[in-house]
Image 1 (cartoon, rainbow, N blue to C red):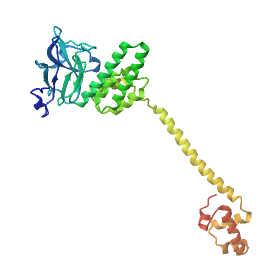
Image 2 (tube, rainbow, N blue to C red):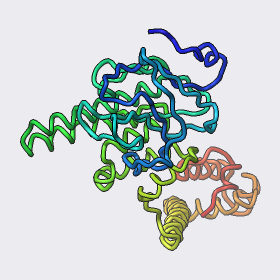
Image 3 (cartoon, rainbow, N blue to C red):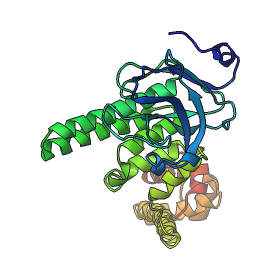
Length: 320
């Protein structure tokens, strides 16, 4: 292919769409670029939507400078009109389909070429995001051609399978508008109720996108159901009650356990235990109870064993 004269300039940062079209005598030699403000208007055509045009020379070469476009990506459409037809006319479906869609901004450099038909088999030589756009369009064409030759049951099955493939492209595509284009082509509105979580995740993934296309899409996706504030207070109250109950049970169980241990002491051991908790020495306890020191030591050893204690410090800390 012979590159257009503006190609060298496009390499230096000026946005441009250029390429070569193999046109027969049934087509006008002008290619038009239209802005698509809303995905619902992709198949709407009027002269006011056309924002640029270029003559196609005898070799089929054209070029459109697009450095006047905004910096943000938008949807656009390229089309060529049939000879003796209005310039603002598009043909939908079939090999004579005279348009295709693309995503571009003022810095986009896009080279295209049609191999057969008019736009039925367009190859994108540069620009990865528009290569994916063409893959999406090819899937949609497969759906249409399969449905045309199939029974209703088979066509429904095939369409669901292809639409799932489009949703997978949308889920993994790194280009936000191209990802949205794949969902649009998958007829997502009829699938929202079935796969609501998928679309909510998609919205979350592209939450920083502020383009009007995403705003329209978000308006159609139900927001995740939130717990009412009154329910949150109720749940918080239940958790607090549970925590308090658990804490009280721990205190109660601890007290009951110690009380049960104290009940294992004999009457004399209880007296000695009370004196131990007052900090009395064995000699003082012996004098107060009028028993021998060896007897006091024997009782202290028994108390330690029954209460699982190891020292007088633990005796002082023992709570009944």
